[in-house]
Amino acid sequence: MKTIFITGASSGIGKATVELFSANGWQVIATMRNVEKGKKLVELPNVVVMPLDVTDPEQIRETCRQALEQYDVDVLFNNAGYGIMAPLELIPETEIRKLFDTDVIGTMLVTQQFIPHFKRRRAGAILTTTSLAGIIALPRDGVYGAAKRAQQGMVESLYYEMRPFGVAVKAMIPGGTKTNFQTPLNDVTGYEKAAENQRKYLLDGHAEFPEPEEAASVIWQATTDGKDKLRYPTDSVCRKLYDQYISMGMEEFKEYFYKRLFE
Image (tube, rainbow, N blue to C red):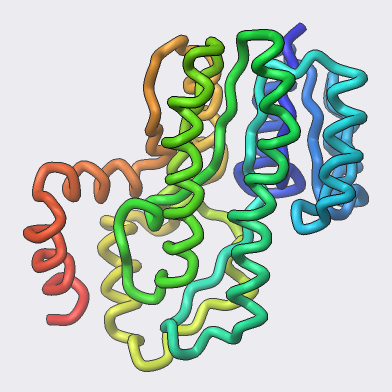
């Protein structure tokens, strides 16, 4: 039985991934800050819940140590994240630090715990939920996008470091999945019209953003397809914008997107 270790597994993409991998016969180690939120998950076949706050280095070391002592982990899925969306001038320093502690430093510290394990076994995969904001800069995404670009940089560098050991490294890239991760701060002050235009553009006529189950299915694909592929857009929103950005190039895209939002 193969084993996956998932951070941020209590809701959204993480929870959907737990459910999908469990249904496909995998052993799932579902980690989260508040294990009370995992009560229903432990009722699923082959699912264990462990406490993990990725802003707590001591807990990172202890939880990862326990997991690696008990299981031969095949896949690490870095999914824990903290999202904020607001004009740069309005974001408090505490929010900036919290976001980077979670999305950047936490992701790196968890990954460090698993690298020796994967090198020894010379097989496995490290997947990380980054974001379209880590590739394409959007308004009110300055802080979040900066953190996600740092994540993306880590993933792309780690690809080269781990490939000689037979370990796959892949970025899972959501663009508009329906989750609650941005509820801590979502401020449109001064950019109300642009924010509404952006939402309409990303929805592309749909009533809601894609469900996290769509992303989970792409994570399953990335885990099992055996491909030497680095970037996996996980939803229709990401695929649309990502393809436009790649085909146009940055200079043409920035003019196109500015007009869609502000004119």
